[in-house]
Length: 185
Image (cartoon, rainbow, N blue to C red; front, top):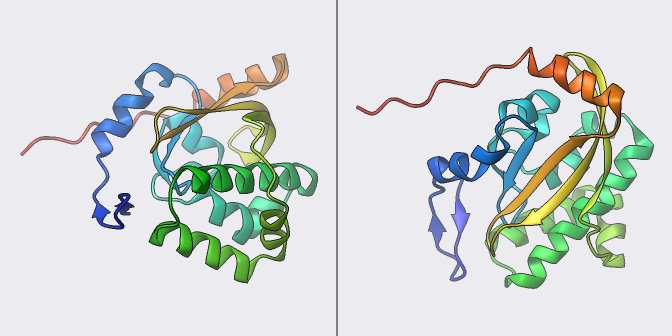
């Protein structure tokens, strides 16, 4: 994974910084995204919810190009609209660098839904709800909130939608463990 600066130069990501930014949300499903909607860091609970919420995955590509993302059609349509709006909002803050051209070009060519939604130009809501299917404890409905931390990073935090979701999230938390910290040589 590479990050591109404003001049189009590749900048290596700093995984330690990403993990540090997520520390306050360590017990919740939370994800740190770059400006192209690539997952830079995710809490263990977020990774347990979906293969889309794993470091290195571009959630826009996953949403539109992975059939697994489209299992729940009603929920997917809402997520697809929000993801497109987030990508558009990010592009409004940055010039169209290589990363944007790559993501938007690929999605426009391979996903009619993306091309249509992109053309409409909707604005991101910043919050909503989503259902995660096929987790270790079944379906988990969650609310989410999107917060821009700075010009380069967006935080996506999920919260239980109701008591049943809180219970399901608690059961899911019992199935995950934090990976060991990298050792220094």
